[in-house]
Structures are given as structure tokens and as C-alpha cells.
Length: 118
Image (cartoon, helix red, strand yellow):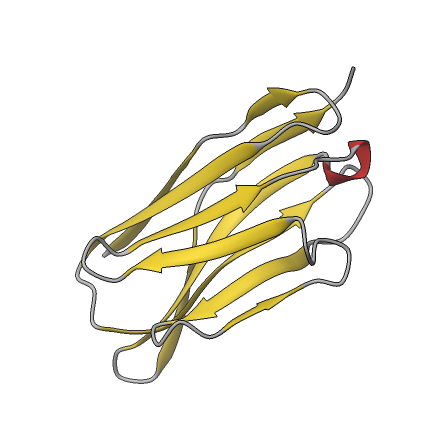
């Protein structure tokens, strides 16, 4: 079984920074992508940033230039550095892993709350 454990969320003032981490454990085969999604109250879950095992990354337009995703393949850990945070970034952030193992499988973390408020 695969487990994803997120950490690093919290309360921050507008303009501040946070760094999220997500460590994957269990039986890890070939990682296709790892990424971060977020869901704000009353809204659908949206993709924030994704990165391939080769390091190729893409971002939602709303976070480009402010957020940076990175992947430590040796630790099966993905990070999300969030700078210049805005109140509209407030959401529960979920980690996602896509892995090849008898087909493409997707796994989700429980989520970590990020609140941007003065």
C-alpha cells in the first residue's frame, strides 16, 4: 500500500511564505508525476502544480511566479514552496502521486490546511 503524508501547512499573513512537503512511503514503483491540488470551501479541487520524475513542472496560471514545485526522487518527496501568498490561496492542499504499477494508479494524501489572513 502507498501512503502520502503532507506537512508544512499553517496560518500566514498575506505576502508571507510556506513550504509544503509530501513524503510517499510503502511500495513505490515507477513514479509518473507528483503534484499538489487544493480545494477551497465551496469550490472544486484544482491542480496547483505537478512535476514529473524527470523534473518537468507545470503550474496553474494563478500561482505562476509565486510557487515552485520540486521533487526529491531518492526520498520520494515532493515540495511546494509558496511565496507572496494571497488570501485566495487559502485552501486545503492535497498531495497526489501517479505511479506505474500494473497500470497507472493515483494516490492522495489527507491534505494540509493553508490559511492566508491578516
